Length: 124
Image (cartoon, rainbow, N blue to C red; front, side):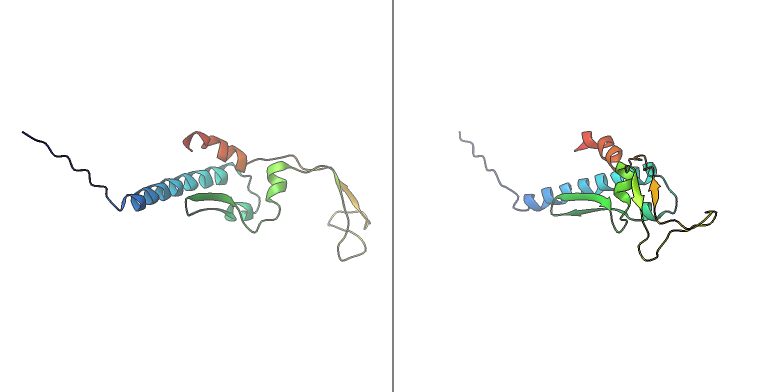
């Protein structure tokens, strides 16, 4: 009496694993982006419209594109001076007179990206 065992490796296993990882990262990216959109404060909608996720070669990227003030919203800003860029003075509706500069008191942080990432951290 004899027994023969044959093990055959599916040569497509690497593609199967790559596709499974890509599907998982795509789903995770959608969830993180959705959390970011829900957690972000909305004034004009530009910040929310700039949020994205993408998967490329086993790497997930989640962030904000073409919105230069995203980091000020996420991290806040300290007191700073605002000066005119193209004019000689600043003026706005309701101001008593034009001024050369304004001391801005700063902006408190309103995080949306980090909490969204931390919420899904256990899934990585």
